[in-house]
Image (cartoon, rainbow, N blue to C red; front, side):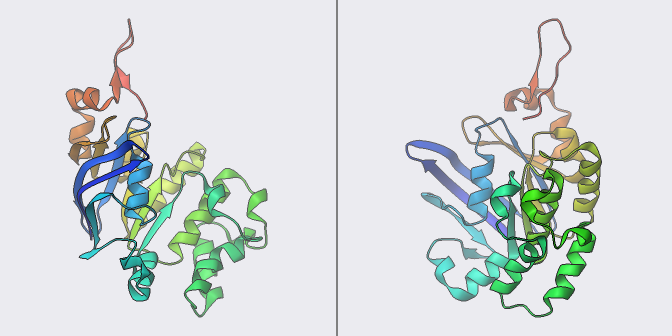
Length: 249
């Protein structure tokens, strides 16, 4: 589905991706880990075609993802409906006066028919049916998260990119979202801080170092049980006089 080949990306003079390579197959659920500043969010933006590498290439279903390729109307429509990115802060994704209009926005851009049918279906799946007439800005963080997620899922993407999807959720909402994500057929790549949450959803983990390079790509349980790899990744630390433990980065 996605191939990332030796990409480099930098803001100004600082690289946030260095020689990054991996591939993603249909149906995979992948957790993306790394200390703060390792480049997780930038990598998700690269995969979503919001920014582009200065070197190397990203291919979506065999076609290069570039500024130029996204100018092609047919490819742009296919890519934008196939790949969806949920930002860590849902407020930056919500700009319509009502929840109904948030959910209908993408469908209208695609001139989709039967708006009510699609909106009611996804509103029910994400427990939003009673909020369709409400203003998103007046709702809770968890409700905003579900609205932002619904606005992506309503386009039925093949690949779902999630940037810290649990950061604004309480334990009850976290449990609901875990079950919901596990029920989806979409391919998932999730930037996370919590290893135990990741193990409930993902089979594979990609770990970025503080030098912005991939230092592990493989089975998530093997990684979580390997103290040497955890220390190398900065996810395991021994405090003086205490047992070592996970850091949730």
